[in-house]
Image (tube, rainbow, N blue to C red; front, side):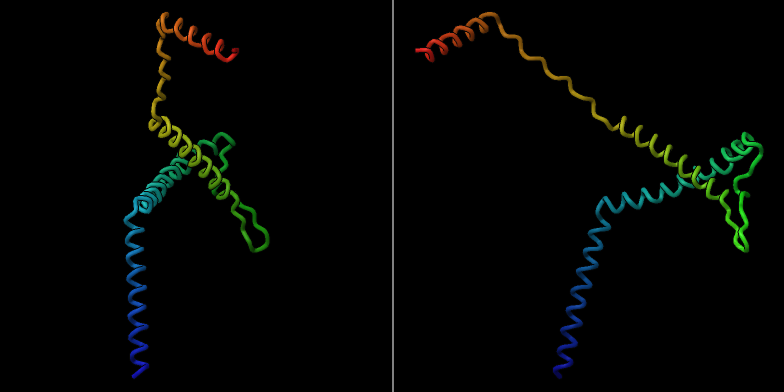
Amino acid sequence: MKKDIDLKKEKEEMLKKGGKTVSEFKKFIAKGNAVDLAVGVIIGSAFGKIVSSIVDDILMPIIGVIIGGIDFSNLSIKIGEATITYGNFIQNVIDFLIIAVCIFAITKLLGKLNRKPEKEPEPEPVKEPNTVLLEEIRDLLKEKQNVE
């Protein structure tokens, strides 16, 4: 009998903890940061495919012609049974550099578009000559009182 009561209490506690975890997860997903991150990853993946296509289909053939018709993807070294395809590595480094340059350019552009124009400092109000004279007289009177 006591075991049944203990098992029921444990089951209720587990359901409460599970419900709390589910509600915390719902709050996390509903936050803008998680959604923004997911959108960024998806767009980044698509952007990576575009850049890879530019590198593979346009830039690498041009670079290959410039350096004498070398196809980087076929560059490899065979050491015993192992084949090291360093040409793929070179191509991936070039992919990375192009993606980094593109992202840098986009962030700079977005930074310029989002930058708020700086407010010009307001000029000090011009005092009337009478006000300047009165302030000088006030200062002289204060000095005279401090001397005596």
